[in-house]
Structures are given as structure tokens and as C-alpha cells.
Image 1 (cartoon, rainbow, N blue to C red):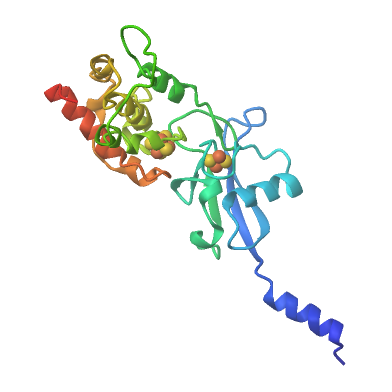
Image 2 (image 1 turned 180 degrees about the horizontal axis):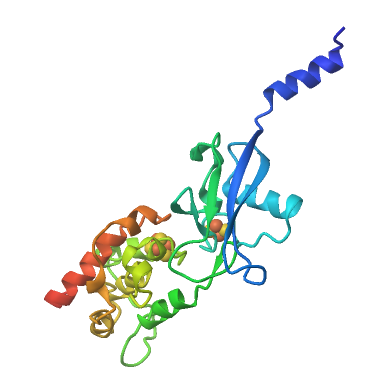
Length: 252
Ligand code: SF4
Ligand code: FES
């Protein structure tokens, strides 16, 4: 005979949003093997939770050796870009319900950069390319005594490329970068664009010359992978095209 207490438990269980999800993660530990292996983890998830929540549950409750980067958990720091079901995304911005959770969800490190362990790659070549384009305001003459003024129109010229969080989702989705890690890659060009088109900056020519290099902007094959991958919605390919045009016309 059912009791009010049992009825309540059954009703709560029927209403539970939790489902069992298979997280299939490509594991790599150079201290154990030179080869990576796929490993399945079963995790109880509310479909409204994110891939990052699933990774946390695995790390905290099942296998503390699972290695990945994350910091802000809110799409700001750019540290948790990974390949999820074959597409570059931020784990903290990807909901389980949007990934067809009846099937295993595949999670692996981004491509084109050396995997150090599990989902962690060596970001140094990526950041070196970023440093190479001088991602800071360059001006000549004396320091002004008040702020450098800029019109709304001038500010809007580079607004899109200010949104970059350096997650590397674009660069590591680029087939040119996969084949030749010497290519500056979309993220470095986006960050060069941000200063080349800033009316207050005076090193545009210098940055354009850096990107005129054999490994520079002309390597782009306009595949749009970068634009598709960008979690900030930046029109990456358009920015690259604008830098190419500035190199030809020297107008920016
Ligand atoms: S342009 Fe977009 S995808 Fe590329 S590093 Fe910046 S935020 Fe990430
Ligand atoms: S953890 Fe910071 S962007 Fe995802």
C-alpha cells in the first residue's frame, strides 16, 4: 500500500531532471603511454548543466587525474576551449542538452598544439604569435596630459576584435595551422586588427609588415572555420580579410 511519504518520493523521482550521460574523453598521459586512449565515464547530469560541470563531476567524484584547464567558468577567461563532438567550443558555455546526450559526448584537446596531458595543450606557440603582433597601443611623442580622444565611428571600427578572450578556438580549428604551426593563425591576426584599425595607434605599418611575412596573413585560405569556432561571435575571417586589404591598399 502506498503511503504519502512514498508517493512524494516517487513523484520527486519522476520529476528528476537527471539523466545518465556517457562522457567519452580522449586521455593522454606521456608518463604512461605515448598513445592517447578514449575512456568512458557515466555521469548523472541535469541536461541544463554544462560540459564543464560534467568534467568537474568526473574529476571530483571518479578520477582525480583527469586534467583540464578552466578558471572563470563563465566564458571570460578563455582557458577551457576543447573539441566537443568534433567542434571547438568552451566547455563552460556548452550545455549538455545541446549535444544529443543520448549518445556519448566526445571530448578531446584542441588540435594543432602539443597535448601535454588529457585536455591540456601547450599554448606557448599560440601566445608567441600573439606577442609577435605587438598587442598593445603604440604612440609617439610626449605622453598626453589627458585621455586620447576618439570618435564613436573610429571606436566602432575595431569594436568586434576587442572581444577576443584568447581561447585559441579559432587558431586550433584552422587547417592551415594544423599543417604548419608556424602560421600566425587567426587569433594573432584578430589582435593585430584590434590595434591596426585603432585611430590612436601609430604602429599599424609595423604590424602589417609583420603579417606580410611568409607565415602571415596570406596563408589564410578563407575556410571560415575560425569564424564558426569563435565563442565570442567575432567575425574572424572578415577581420583577416580587412587586414589583407589594408596590406594591399595601405589604408587603415
Ligand atoms: S578570435 Fe574568438 S576564437 Fe579566436 S582566440 Fe579570440 S575569442 Fe577565441
Ligand atoms: S572557464 Fe573561463 S572561459 Fe570557460
